[in-house]
Picture (cartoon, helix red, strand yellow):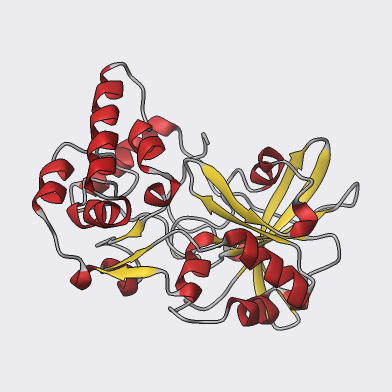
Length: 287
């Protein structure tokens, strides 16, 4: 995405409260000639089994306006569905231990170099599929082509998050969160029961993928919807802002907003290299 920063996005200068809800202004983003202001809604840490309908009613509905679009973090929806795996319930096998030694490592997060994460992928897709994905990925890397492993293994494998030993939240030290089940159905239920138009996205500071959307957004392209949150306004630290309200403000003046201080990619990479010397880097949280 070309945006690199250190720390939390929740700057005190951008903090607002309305109708009992705390949110942070995330600035204006212009998409297809329209101006959209984004508001990152602060929540509690969402535990497994909570009701996402009640969460939306509690945190979003009090400040939602007709015409708004709400982006829902995929991890929170999966936590509500309890679509998770505890590390203690993963039986680590030979192939996960062996293949993880050859997986690509980077300073941005936990990948398939984590044996327990790779074992979950094997359990989900079967060993033959993961062996094929590993072979194809290894061959394509020789020619400078990245990401082939996940294209062969499947989107649900790419969506496995968890086992972050340095996460700000202890829950994620030993818990993996999978891709939400039936994300289109989740969005449809939220729109039907609350009237809130929403989408579910898997976003990070590196990329973003649309997973599901409300019926009212079916006429919008995935590219348009992803661009609305292309700078990942939920954040990647301990912001606890998994719900982003996106509002078309037209020609109206935007709220005062102080942006974070961005680094060059080289500065950020150097920071992450130094940080990784002390252990695995912290990765995406609940927003």
